[in-house]
Length: 175
Image 1 (cartoon, rainbow, N blue to C red):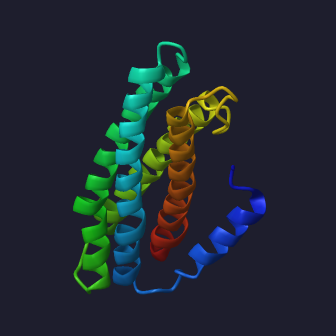
Image 2: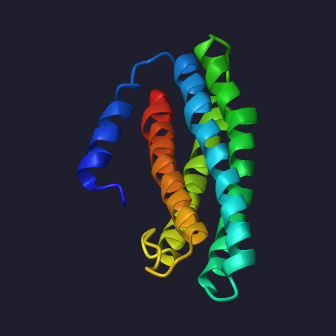
């Protein structure tokens, strides 16, 4: 089931409760919740998409296209997560800890790049949503295809919250 407007408003209100929380606590939450959920969701999605393409792709060619989009999404997202964890988050923590940082070079420029990457990730998820007919498997779909569509939807919902908490909560601590 697609996340509706009311559900999203509830999620967003919960995410907004993180505004004003110390940056170190917020980053720890992002890492433990959203980066971990994204990595687990991607592993599940990659496995399901490969298996579905292999066993069912011959009679449901859309599964081959979904596999390709999933592969691209996961490749880009893994790099994105690593870069946030290696560059941006340490800069936020350093600033919060009182260390002098070059805000433009270490924070603002990377934030702009990561916001662009968030938009690109959302674009890839839009393509996956279209390929999966808004995560609605056909009536004659095999259980593997249904599981794949469900995994796509779970990751999309999680990533929406993930992007929101970074763009609208963490990044706003500097603005």
